[in-house]
Image (tube, rainbow, N blue to C red):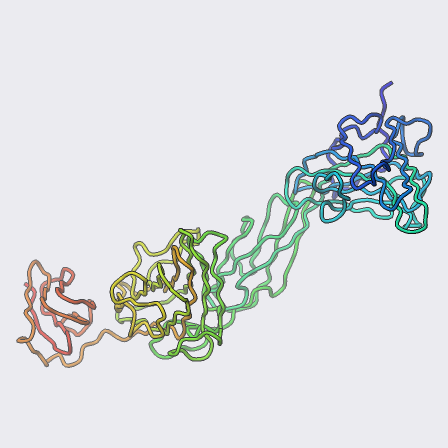
Length: 541
């Protein structure tokens, strides 16, 4: 005769959806069917006896046959009967267990249900092998002798998987002797079920870089559960974002309330965090200085990017570090500890937006010190250019490098160095913007192999000076050979910083070179070249 499943407890509401079907095979306990059996750590010769499809007695909430288990031991130790089966659970659902039970005799005895890993022969089953979701035993006097787990168990929990995958449902019944009490266990269980339920989302989020100065780039990490869509309101009047983990730029000073609404097919939940992002007014900078927070004591002025570093090889940075400092620094510094690359690029980059004028020349400097033992395959590079993509790509191509330390170029003995960029870096050169506007100063440091790196930087400065020319009548034409061809000014055998001015005194090109110098293509007219303190007037036809 076909057996009808008895629904023990059904509670419906507008905020939950229970998916049809019991995930447990042969939960009616009339046959062993899909269940596996393990006696766990039962003492030899003391295994319990079990009867499937037992009809001589049954729980009040049971239907038809049940599983009858009788356990006892005459020696110290346990006598346990464990049944289990593999099931696939989803991280986007909540799981509820229920069953009918009847306790005929419990002396130092228990009945416990778990979700976790597969049982191991000869080993007891408990945390951390699995998470207990329901139990009754002699230590819980509130347990009813004849009832259901959902209504009467001493321990009852719903289960939310951390990840989607295969888990094991485990039910163990048994008793044990560890004192003078004679153990005995006689239990009947029936109608075992495990069902999935969807609920309204549990909404939550975190933020990094939430206090700083404009432009403040804040990254939001979504910690919500059970949601299928999201709506972010950043509190500054900007457009709603529907991304899972958005990044947002705050361009003006103020306190901003952030709201996240998470939704699924059941409903939606909203979390409001008042004054979650604080954007402070930037302090005044010294005349000509363009970098905020160059003393490396406040990370809120900078945006951090690990570029193309593998996720498991991110360097660790310590801001305002006062233990490992460059001699040329002052106060705290930025200390970066990068792991070995093992053939991969390991990089730490910081950057910030700077507004530069085409009428000025900009020079970079800063204190630098290497604390690594045996540094190799290493670089620190300073760029002015576009904003890093933030997509895990490297930075450098089509940008302008203005200073560099590395472990392989001549003149860059960076290992053990304690100095400055102006005195010790290679490829050091001024930067002259072609147009006035916003640029990004980017500092990236890293290795691709070897033992990693431990370096400190401090007092980073990007200082601009107007492109003006003094002493326009002080001409010396006999020191350097200078020629013009095809609207280009050329010089041979020069060394040092060369500056090219138009006749009004406006600097139009600066270059640090050794050997030959060639200007960019020029319009016809008079120009002034300054090199090594000497000035030369030249006509371009």
